[in-house]
Length: 189
Image (cartoon, rainbow, N blue to C red; front, side):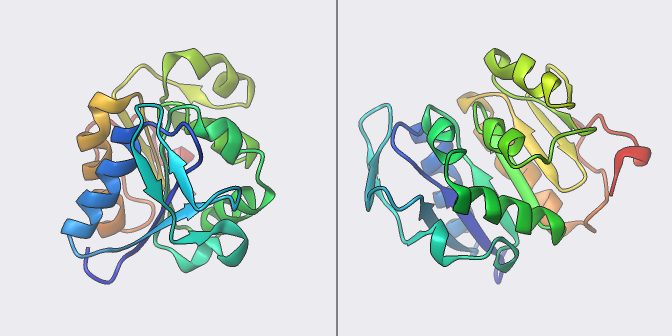
């Protein structure tokens, strides 16, 4: 992962495991990890009480500057999806064939960025209907990779989520190597 640039988005009430684990894991692997906020605060508190400081705000960044964007769950995605700068970054990354990853309630941001139509995804079951109504093919799996899109269900899946993101970063942009992936070659970009 050395030389890879990763952005992890935070807002208040993020899930501590889903936010902190990718930051630590990708830094351990040598990636340059930026903790990105909406600009509403410099420090965000997780639902579990942990506080993390952001390095940058979405307004100052371009999505295609990063190799991967990671959107943790908790209640933070409801705030993240209201940020036009976060949505712009997600769309820029998507258009540039970067890895876009979301766990738990994180796919709410993908819905608002309008990138899930026709894609196979998973999420916390409570937002299944939101994803289906946005045109996604929702499946009940721990982790799903559909091309450059990686989604996971919940905090206990964070390890597999990070491994799948790493696979997506190493593979060609449209490859399908994750055993959890369900998309066929016809749904790839």
